[in-house]
Amino acid sequence: MSITQVAPDVSGLIQKNRVHGSVYTDEALFQAELERIWYAGWVYVGHESEVPDKNDFVMKSIGPQSVIMTRDNTGRIRLLQNRCSHRGNQVCLKTQGNARAFTCPYHSWTFSNTGDLIGFAFPDGYRDNPDADKKTLGLGSLPRVESYQGFVFGSFAPTGVSLKEHLGGAAETLDRLVRTSPEGEVEITAGFLKHRAKANWKFILENECDGYHPAFVHSSIFSVADSAIGAYYGDKSTALTRDFGQGHTEVDLRPEFRKADTPMRWFGTTEARLPEYVAAMKAAYGDGKAREIMIDGTPHVMIFPNLFIAEIQIFVIQPISVDETIQHVTALQFKGAPDLNRRLRQQTMGSVGPAGLLLADDTEMYERNQRGAESLSPEWVFLGRGEQRERRDEDGYMVGHSTDEVPSRGIWRHYAELMGA
Amino acid sequence: MAYKDSSDLLLRATEFIFREARFQDEHQYDDWEALWTDDGVYWIPANGDDIDPEKQMSIVYDNRSRIALRIRQLHTGKRHAQAPRSRVRRVVSNIEIGESGEQGVQVFCNSLVFESAMRADTLWSARTEYWLREGADGFRMSRKNVFLTNNDQALFTLAFLI
Image (cartoon, rainbow over all chains, first blue to last red; front, side, top):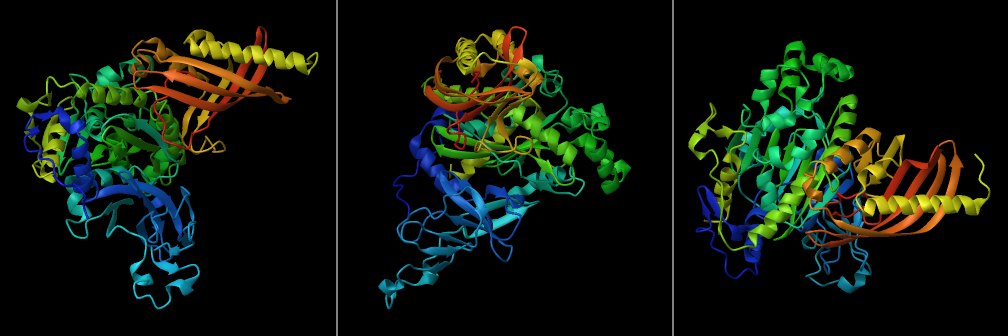
């Protein structure tokens, strides 16, 4: 049952190369986004490797709601709502663990990790009451749970497109990602940093594949850290921005990496520094294919609305309110690659989170964006960069220069469809 | 090394911690960096105080060269999260001496840090553990562990020196 009385009309707010500033500040619109995006379509929740064993669980979220991701005793992954069916208390207070059942601390109702109600306390009080039917009093759970390459997504909608259809062209980026492991698997095992920003979630969504800002927002670290990243986002870069459709976007750095033709350049290192990893890759894929993978590197892709894979780490975007968002971030870890994983953790810790040498500056920009959007004039945000030079690639996806706003335009076109514009 | 008595050690450790606090409050980056030993490690864990920083993500886990990089970035004037700089003032208290050994002497304190920045005012709270080693010109930090009281929560940007 919805309490939204009047659905905001976004049709006048989103145009082909500009959006109205109120899309970042309108409280009613935020509530409508929860209903039409976060509680209606596929949203990334967690990774299978976070619940490796039967009866493992980990606390996750979809929008402001917490969601318990469990692996039940048959091995199936479930997404449960953290709300007792009795009087709404939270049934789980731990962030992770292993449990066959969750007992609500309030009146001791007990639920299995499939969500089913197992038992009432003092059951005499419910005997012969036809409405006290355990079968109808389980925990809320997401009707659809699917995973791709170990990434688990949930949808509150009982019907709709499959996850594979939702991912569309972006599915290939996850295939590309897992190949960086000699065993073909990603693991999420290093724990998450949680970075809070006083900003609307869409500023973060749009920034993830904005290749125009790094030269300016990150000039401080590029100038002191002997980093090659800056050049990928320069005027002369051959890297591409791409719109996969359905809101998914990427910055494709492969043209630059292929030009350099040097394995492990994508990670700013060399084969010589990672001998065990290189040997494992060659053994797994053969010399030629391993070399190709180690040149191409991992993707930089924003999977709408909340999973950002940024070469060496993943971010999960959690909207809290119209002007507050949490970025959950951790290092990617690749199965069978301990020497690479150690460096991935070190690099990630330096770059991201509240004190990160990169992300503290991005987050500063998000918060200034939010304050800027409170000013009423000019009313529009202009997203026309590179419109005159964008083109279709061989797969039919729109691509542009690495600094062009192809991703933002793609995100907003999809957003407008979801929001009924 | 021999200390005259425990009150002398406590006094010297207290003077060191107060000086470090002032350098941080006043963004005297080079003076602060000079307080580190060559093998110094600066650690701010996340998600509890007892995680393994070699395995789990920390807010800061800087070796000496990354401490230097952090300072060089602040000096560019384009570290946007500190341009303009936060205004910061901290109160340090509950200083206690712990163990001593080859790595130096272990000192604990509590601190409350008030940060005023463009976003808002933020109050930070921490338990800090130092390992101080005797040098030619007094103590230096070989280890500083900052256990933020709310390190299990989502935190705002923390780009000043804490």
